[in-house]
Image 1 (spheres, rainbow, N blue to C red):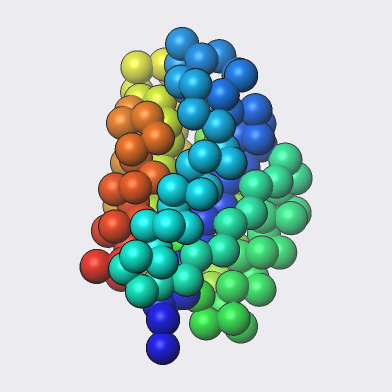
Image 2 (tube, rainbow, N blue to C red):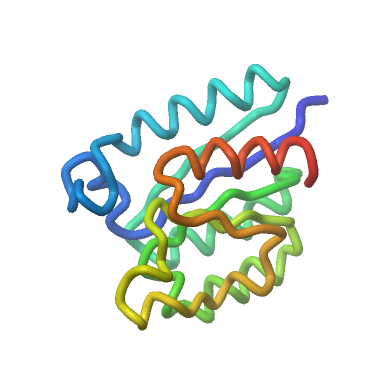
Length: 145
């Protein structure tokens, strides 16, 4: 049976490719998702993707993942990283191992971005490596989680 993974992207990540390219680059979310799906398939895994600008949609998807047998989550929570106790509680509640990923180096940005409600629960955190951070996170999830 193929390993089941879930890739979640939070608010404003649908704007990748056009939003602040000096910070986030020119790669679109569709390109990131296509590459992630191909990477997972090449490793014999299944990968489902969801991007939402709505915290509740992400929480509902995390909760559904448990019943679906998802074995690992890769999540870029976007701005919810720094604000969402509810997202943290959902991840803790399902107890599915996850990797937190950020395209930019959150520690080289505004001080409010330096705190993550998710990091201490994460199996790993990848930041500042651009879209390659997704690849690294998915490879880690497939091999280690």
